[in-house]
Length: 464
Ligand code: GAP
Image (cartoon, rainbow, N blue to C red; front, side):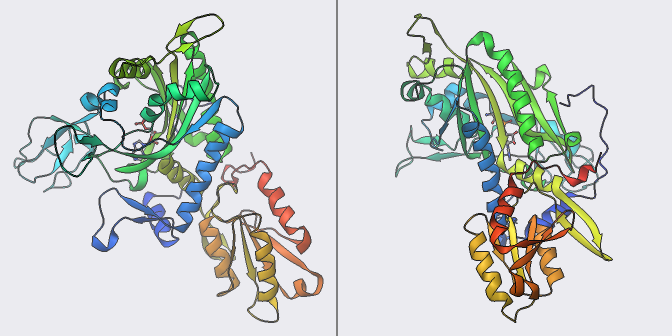
């Protein structure tokens, strides 16, 4: 496991840039700027067909690791709008703020702690405050929660907030889970869902958005075991990212400095990925102590504690929280998978995604659109799509159809040719090795499913 600061720095020598990723995502229907026909809306994005499929696969793998591969975690899907007291108790109303400065000259607003990364509105080569015309206000705190009102009239007491994290819904349900799930600490509650933050520093594509999706799990443990479970989850989560293909030398764990810790945390480490914008947070893994349950007990007047019926012992569990972003995960997987190479003198772009994450697992392509090939290819396609996400494509030169599938990361392309009609075999082309093997049509479904179950290692790591 890589841990900073002992590790040597990794230099960014990839062919990938953020511009190439943005362009591929739009061209191939992964991600579009939101409201584009109206000129777009800052830091909002829409996911296209392949983006939806890829996101689904990421969520499925997270649920699999949380629910299917263990028996100490249960699932939840809580409301986005919760009782407003939630945010008073959690500390978000008072403390979920960024310090902002306004420029009275160019009318732009900047995060006070990001001035050295921001561009002056009139002279983008300078930072705000560096030109004689700049006229900055003092820093003021700005709450990042979006407000709205419930009910038909706007009156006192009707203000509510769009949740800025999914975690609080889990704490509000802690008591329900103790009663119905028959779990006792150590156990976890996991949730995937949208969160909202009125972020000021935006840009960098889907890395930081105002509406985004989180995968969070709150793991409730006896207080004395918290440090041990924190270590457990650091290791588990690093394993998850690497097994899904992220290169280990592009991943690291960075413990927070004392002055970086959130108000609720006694220890947090970020899983960071080496994005084209530099090392940045993919996931935070925090030891939240008993902060949240204690606060909600205080504000709600309810007892939020575990009572051991055998011994009579009672305690407020401590919480270990792995909290990842679905959108950042998608960005990291695409960035890590992006590659360019040359086939027979022609440049190709290819997404070397772990096959389990690939939006489409197999493409079925008749070599020509005649001689019975489309009919046989359709039969093969109908059979495969019963098992996996498959795609049929008969339009255009075969080389161009391969390129299209390479760009969306499809690991295998099945080609139907004249021989297929004679002996009911097809060729299976591998996206990465480009090898082509002949397989009997009757074995094809099983062959693809077998390949999907194989452990996978990105070819970007070479043979070493
Ligand atoms: N409950 C703890 C929590 O919310 P966080 O570090 O603020 O912690 C967890 O968020 C993860 O959510 C981050 O590691 C990141 O992947 C994702 N995330 C946070 N803010 C985001 C934003 N504005 N846009 C996209 N993803 C974001």
